[in-house]
Length: 444
Image (cartoon, rainbow, N blue to C red):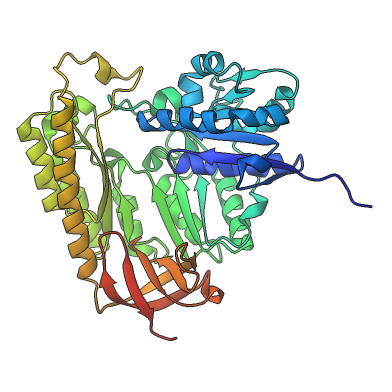
């Protein structure tokens, strides 16, 4: 006799790797209650949208998404809003969508998602308070639908104690809290057992991991411990704060072959004046010395970064210094954005005349144009070289083409079969494009 049909959950994720990770953890927890993840909200009994609030665009996406799915409540589906926007604007969202949404909860409530969904079956639920460190429990479940994936995120901390004047994260994810290293290594071993070969350690400021916990590993020690887990082929991490990058982490690039030759190192601006007003607590020269140290330890290191243009009071000269920093490094990629005022951040109280929107737009266009030129030149310089590629699976555009990444985090596409998924294979680069490489497998 057939049992009851499984309940189905659809999760739409906006934002960073932390949100992607939280979505996976919600799936893992809800699977205990019989939920399976689906890719079509029309099929779902439960629809969750995991939100971002670092910039304004995800807020527009949320409104659009709720508009697209709200009619599904008529068929019995429950709809919930999770994530950073639910944290800082939960009360307003709860009121605004009183006829459309059953559940609103912040990142600290992810471990309680099963209880929240159960409550939402009979009442509307709003939970967006921060938990004390003693009450917070990191989710240890590994998502059942992750079997066979090649790469995976593992969170090592939550929250952030930095006070960058442009950043809303301390208001949405709370105070910094390091996850016990034993739990991290337990999750890494479980993922490797599922077939994962590349682990990305994630946190708001990974370099400060463990420093506030007596007897805990620091971040460099954690890297060595993860590298010692049998089956871990590659290790990445994000995000680093340049101020907190220590010599011990630089040394790890000499010692650990598992540590990939790519680092995302947000600089935000090339101007000392702007960096000071952002409260980044390093100078341009500090950043450049760190880059030199890292590349001395790992000569093929690829660097990517974050850039904000149009920060309050940014002058033409400040922006030119950002352009010159891009040339001095140079970066293999950048997430670059116009400054976006966020509620509750100190930058809102600055008395400078805001940079006009047309000026911000023009500066961003100039930055991105030059960044794309540098990326193209970097990728074309690889033509004819052989690189090792960890194969992640078929290209979404062509099932006869396999897609993977180099140690320097460059996407490379080449003809091949799905049996290569999870393997590291040598590929000769035939052509470099702005955002990817095309190649040919040498041992085919």
